Image (cartoon, rainbow, N blue to C red):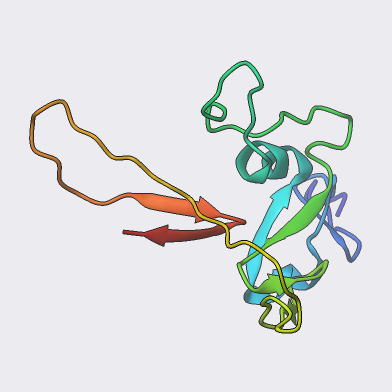
Length: 131
């Protein structure tokens, strides 16, 4: 709109200058619309090879030209697809397989002598449980 100086975006684009692609179907209510840059930073793998205990809580920093220009859906647990509209089927081990070992995760919680209280969260494969 040249009279008001406001852009009217074509379908599939958004932002004050129509500079960002929209998330498909607004992520179907089953995910979060984010940019490529934020997807890497907030949802990307947190790994620092210089430490033994993981990284710093921040995923990889994406800085290419399209970092803030492309909207993508980060789907909620149990949803998938470009617009998060598909639901995952329950998965488990094939009951016919044999000779497999169970996976165990051991967590040590310690204190320096003062009382220990509260709760903690465990995140595995994108699913978080609070204990």
